[in-house]
Image (tube, rainbow, N blue to C red; front, side, top):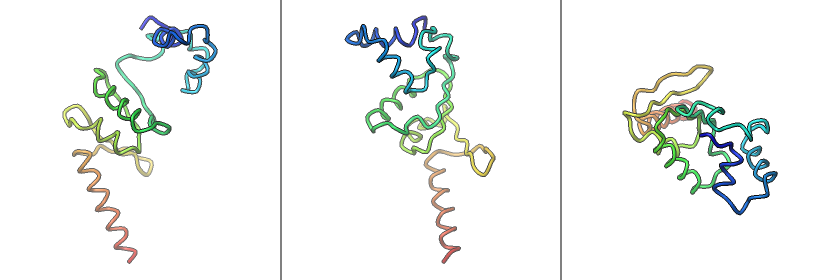
Length: 134
C-alpha cells in the first residue's frame, strides 16, 4: 500500500521499466487523475471499501470473471453498481455477505431475497406489462 500506482505496475511488469509515460497513460485511461499517479496507494482511497460504477462496461468475459474472483476474495465492503447480471450473480452468491439494492425511478430500495429471485420478479413484472399491452 506504500507504493504508488506507477511503481506498483512497473514492479508487476518489469518489461515496462523506462516506459513510465505509457504506464501513466494507462492509469489515465482507467480514470486515475495524473496528480494521483505518484501518490501512495494507501492515500488514494479507504482500503476497506470499493465503489464500483459499471466496472464491466469495456471488459471481456475472462476479465469479468477475474474481477468477480477478486471481489470474492476482497475482505472489505463493495458497493457495486452494474447492469451485468453475470457479475452480480457471481458477487452476490453468498446471501449472508451481500445485499441487493435497486435504484429505480429516483429511489433506492432494499430487495429482500436472492439475485435469482430478483430476476424472477423482474420477469413477472415484464410479463405483466406485456400482458397489459395485449
